[in-house]
Amino acid sequence: MIEEAKTYIESRTELRPSIGLVLGSGLGGFAAELSDSVELPYGDIPGWPSSTAVGHAGRLILGRLGDREIAVMAGRAHLYEGYAPAQVTFGVRVLRRLGVRSMVFTNAAGGINRELDQGGLVLISDHINLQGSNPLVGPNDDSCGPRFPDMSEAYSREFRQIAAKVAAELCIPMTEGVYAAMLGPSYETPAEIRYLRAIGADVVGMSTAAEVIVASHMGMKVLGISCVTNMAAGILPQKINHEEVLETGRQVQETLVRLLKAVLPQLAEAAQ
Image 1 (cartoon, helix red, strand yellow):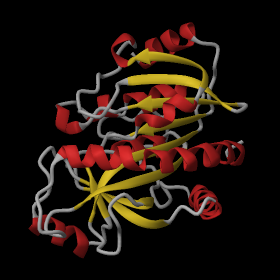
Image 2 (cartoon, rainbow, N blue to C red; image 1 turned 180 degrees about the vertical axis):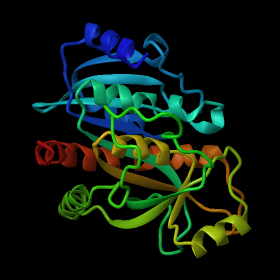
Image 3 (cartoon, one colour; image 1 turned 90 degrees about the horizontal axis):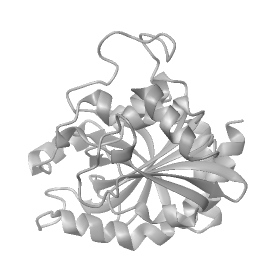
Image 4 (cartoon, rainbow, N blue to C red; image 1 turned 60 degrees about the vertical axis):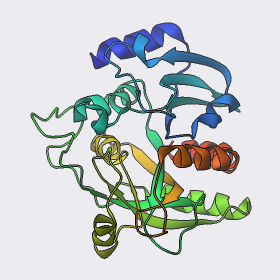
């Protein structure tokens, strides 16, 4: 099915991107920055799972940013939607078959570290996978990667350094942190947040980890960026709702777009 999806996409555009971008909840504004773009609804691509979560457009967009050809996943599939790990990571595998060598994953996340601010951006330095699954379980395809892939630098140190430098030049405050991936769809309890803080997590969300595992397995270089759309349960004396997550995502979109426009060409060049 991956080959069928690849063939379908190649039949719809002559663009051959080398870098891919996944836009999380409420963070879809970047796609409008591309020129000569082609939009493909996920439902039209063979085998590609539809995105049912609010705030996820559910389109693959291929276009140009300057002289760089880029593939943008506007929205993703989640395990909590009932999809299997292979479906959640299907898009990443297809992009790799299309020739994408580097990926940037963005997500909406809850802030665990009390020093973080709502609406802030965090460079993901590592993750803790607590989703109860791994997308590499089952027979290994040796043509994609090794049976036991190393994950000591799943989030490229070089890419993080480039992103931090660009953020500083643009006067965009940014810190590094560890992302905890939970299954969802319920938000975490205050006790779970205390546990996550104790084991070293700075932000928490319901995506990204499986995609990064597959990207790393396939030899892709990865940058991860979390938008702190809310403070996690128990941090503030208020309840969490998804509309707040989406609204904060919309508010920070302009800042994220500025960062991505500046950083993506540099990542593409570094990966050559």
